[in-house]
Length: 124
Image (cartoon, rainbow, N blue to C red; front, side, top):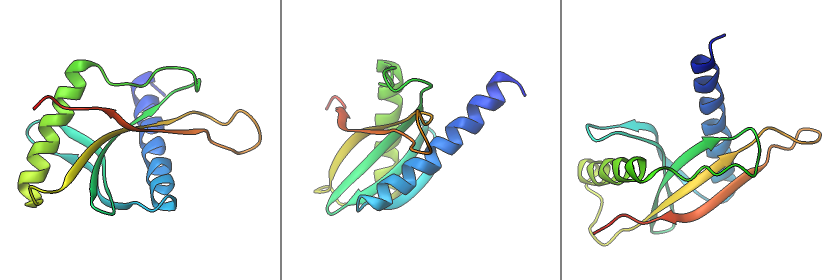
């Protein structure tokens, strides 16, 4: 299997695990792999009154950084604005940009999940 196809498959698997993790921690999934003109958002979730735009990264080693580049963050921010506009989210809704990083199990069957809340902010 080509590296790109394998990476895509691992990414989709990581997104599935991230959605399970988010549901188990009290989040409601609003959208998965949402695509707009500005770009794609891996997961849009809601917890209480906070809308959470999640970028999911699969990393072979838990210590690898998964923070998106400045260009990727701008794209995600523009996509979040487009999502909010299309979904008619209230202007008073609080937004947050999280990173969920998934790594292969080190022992047994435990998949390390690293959830960085408020991983970055969008410029106003």
